[in-house]
Length: 73
Image 1 (cartoon, one colour):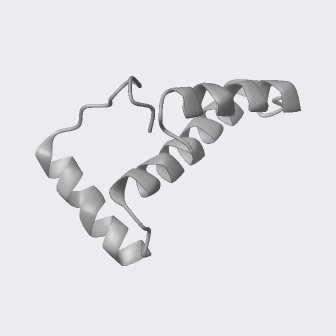
Image 2 (cartoon, one colour):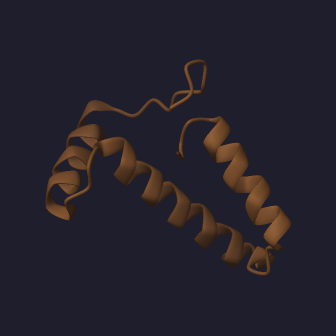
């Protein structure tokens, strides 16, 4: 995660669910699982909004932005 990156605030009960899901899924950390969930969710939203044909350049741009925000490594 970037030292000066954005942070996403979630309530305690949602974080507790994320920790439980991390253990069940075997992810290395809640952050890793959250990144995976966010990536999948964003891709689904883009597809349902008619943006399913995202070009490789757009996908790379989105990925770089998520990395810059500390959501992806």
